[in-house]
Length: 102
Image (cartoon, rainbow, N blue to C red; front, side, top):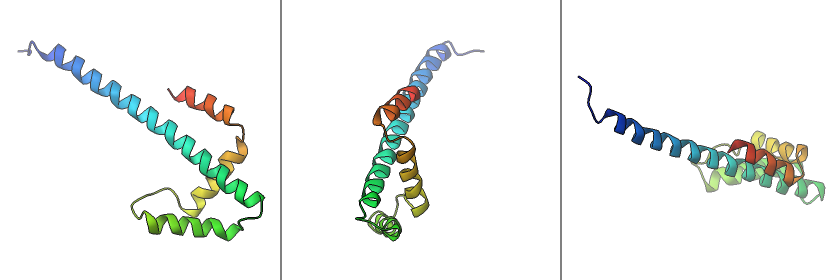
């Protein structure tokens, strides 16, 4: 025997799932902005010779020491953020990419 409330419950479940998708899309957008901004910061520091290549390794260690639970900011990923920025230095291109994630 089918529960007569099941269709209503399915509607509520659909609302929850829709909200979850929106949260994931917003989170992804913010992460992309963050990675691009970090990449820009690193690239600018390296290009003005304020920082040397070893500084990125020191930055990764600093982030890990300050926020031990945070993941994704190892030296290799910081270089990737720099590469991401240098591949897409125009913030309008990144903004267009972000709108595609919505």
